[in-house]
Length: 462
Image (cartoon, rainbow, N blue to C red; front, side, top):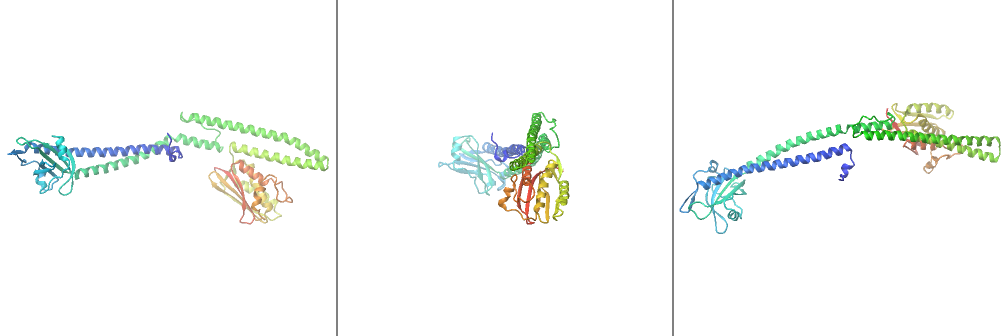
């Protein structure tokens, strides 16, 4: 069965609660309607029985003299009071299918009981049967009426006996019953909602615990899931543990493979650089320059592979404030002669979800780049974006960077000013490490007048 989109996209707990409430409240509504209908039928049945007794008494105690029908002197106390709400009438059918009254109760005063146009035909088709129908009384009140056609001794023509009772009290009793039943069922529905929510929350508690444990494993707070779940969840917990172990083995093999490859390349590259330096000449200069470029690329890709492996392994927490304080003191000494002041700010409980060395490379390259190009001021801010992410913001008051050149400087080895010191890998390293941690790097104009660098990085719980 295909679920509605509103249920399919919601949480499992919400789906269970909504489905249970839909069926339960639907059942309550149907039950309330059925009970109201049964109560109404029972009330009307009592009125019909009363009217049937009244018709039976009229037929039993009416007299016929010379073909004329005479009503009994006493039938019902209420029938003696005018417009009391209980009425009777003795009539006879006419040739044109209508009814002509013969006698009536004092309660009708000068009125007659209303009858359907086809009543005579129905009574003729069902002789002896008491037929019920709705009518309006002398004061326009709703009536429940019954009629029966009989033959009395001493009279050849049939006689129609009619009795009616005001059903206002019945309708009022039914309305009161429905109101009381609705209030009771509303209270029952409210209690049922609370019971369903509690039942779902308690029943799904192992799932919530499993989610928390998976999050703890992902953040590095636990090495594996505890296998203490109900039998339905135990296979899932065991498979997740097996998946974690498999991922750790794959990552470790990748790190080992990359490390072996990098070290295997470093030795020949070092030999090439050494030999080129020992034999000066145009060819040696070309070989030395290309070998150094190869060495930088090897270092860069080795660093990137290690960072990617770290993000998939067990998490570590690194204090952002401590790293920024260390970097600012170091770079203050380096750029003291230039007169660049570093203003940094970060919350004490802000932590980077990763290794300290990676945050040092990201923040160090960003701040050093700002100090290099800034004239007198560098501003560094680290603030929370969400419970799982934070932002590292580095700004300077230097010449800035045109928008069309910003994508270019992130590329490996790109240097806009060849006379400035550096390898051109600083922003590239930041971008690669940020991406490895599932974040991003963006460049824009700073309110200070220079470049604004913003890195989106993972945040660890305090």
